[in-house]
Length: 84
Image (tube, rainbow, N blue to C red):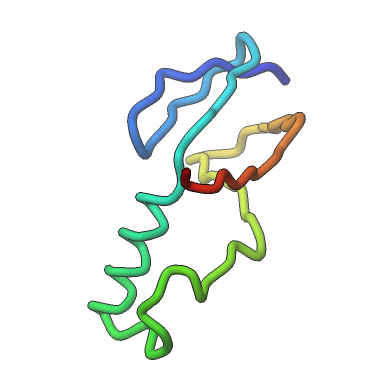
């Protein structure tokens, strides 16, 4: 299935039309998530972002009612850039 997005910063709305490319700097999201998790007491370990690594990905969605839905992903990658 090819998809099109009406992209909002954290909530993409996908429609069946064409391929979409998402290119996003994840570092601010990771920092924010770590800060919130620490504030809520979910993380007791190191406060340093450098001590954490992304280890997996979970993709899913909820649809009310009984619908057939699928999603095709191509060229999924995560790239790191060093700061100069």
